[in-house]
Image (cartoon, rainbow over all chains, first blue to last red):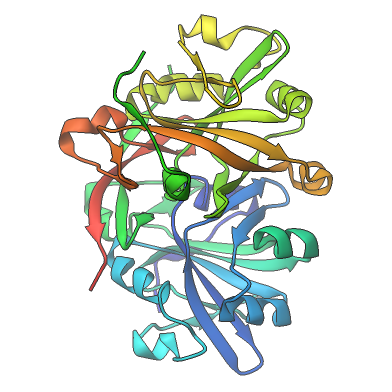
Length: 191
Length: 191
């Protein structure tokens, strides 16, 4: 559905989240599916690639992830800012957010989780690493990234390429209350 | 030393890290002190404000934090990109990074950790919540934010104000290999 996506080497997977973008968490269990926004995620290990992500225990996503042990992380581009905010404020218990927002997905090849490509710069397939204490105390879920893919127009060979001509795919970073900042100017800090 | 800093309400502290900036971790134990860069941090709770941050077990910072149980998190502005990258590649076991880079600090009022104000948009004082398993398995340290302050020119009343006239204070987000992206354009995603 988006012919620009290319596999990302697992040793580069952390780069997709390294700079703190707000992401979409996709989930599937039995016939149930959901998508929510998450501003709180981070890599925790390069190899094997592992992440931590906060998924509140009250959410439908948490219920589905607990049941299936897998989830997707999709990195929305700037063009998806409104959809990202919307799916962060609605509950999948009430509506099918994919239908409401006309979000198309594909079943990712390794775990079968639904992932978005239209408007996203990347997606990761994640397998939950059960950590009952941190899940309960901090809503913090650890997971291993088992597969990743990115739109080569904005991420290729392990590097983001943020340019004026691919602004719609730039990552978005939630400041709060529906206001995002777009990843913008590049700063080269090497001496 | 920077008269623009104002106290941040603890219920707004998560906003300082919500959008995934790369931060500086400051530490102090006995007469020893250090500063390092950390790209991997996130809030995990609004109230009480809690965060998770990855501090590799091989680092001098981790040694000092384990000894003292406290640390500072400072949010560097774009003008500090080179210093941020430098202190992320050097070890405080070898040199005093504050002296080398002429970094001035003040002792934060609650925990006494050294924090930077010149060139930073905000700082947080953090008390480690001992979690031996996640510290060992994922280098992930949980902490409670007990005090926070921000430069009112870029963060006031719980909100970031990212404008053309305060670019030097915009947050930076590490893409990898010394390349950062600066928080840039504002997107209002509310319907």
